[in-house]
Amino acid sequence: MRPFFPYQLIDGWVEMHSDAADRLTSGLRPHQKMLFTSGGSLTLDLELLLEEDVKVDVVRRRETDLDIEIAAYLHAAPGAQVSERVVWLKTGHGNIVYALTVFLLERTDPAILASLDRYFDEPLGKVLNHRRIVFTKTRMEAGVVVCAEAASVLNLPDDSPFVARRYVLADSGASVSQADTIQAAVIEVFSPAIIPVVARPDA
Image (tube, rainbow, N blue to C red; front, side, top):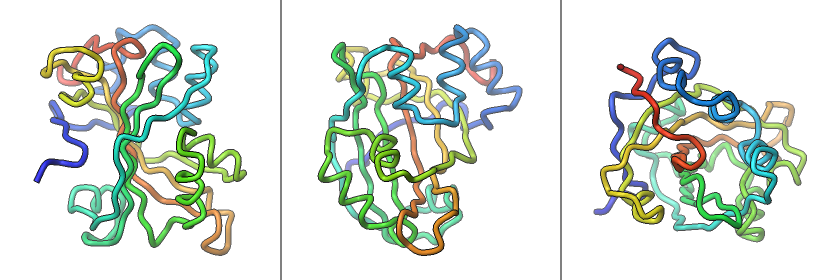
């Protein structure tokens, strides 16, 4: 079966604020490093940086069982029910971030997923902001990946390296009910036009 979000990780994930991650980002320009390491809304950061609206193209989505790798990352049970969503973040000038979000259904308000379906061209961050859900990003890690799907859309060779990051997205914990809760794993692959590969974490 074809992987839902096919990519090959080079050298492994490293903690975002580690020496290895510092080596990965050391050659980036200040605004690029700030964007990559930010724990805030990626959509808002991109719109402030590019001075353009950011929209979404949904590539595919499905409901399935949680695999072992993402289960360990989310501290959840393998086989738990999840909703997976693959999108491109884009501006008027093209695609800029290829992203997978894996929502843990037992910890995610169904109304949030319904909003994503209703406002299908709105990034997740905007949907959460519209619902006034305060969210956090934890366990943030950096890496370099090869992703032929992203490369094809960007008209690059299949073996082109990309800077990527992953994190756990969750609500702030303020809600005492299932309403407005969310827990998901997110992987973001950045177009070189936004964040180029300037170093490897093991360099």
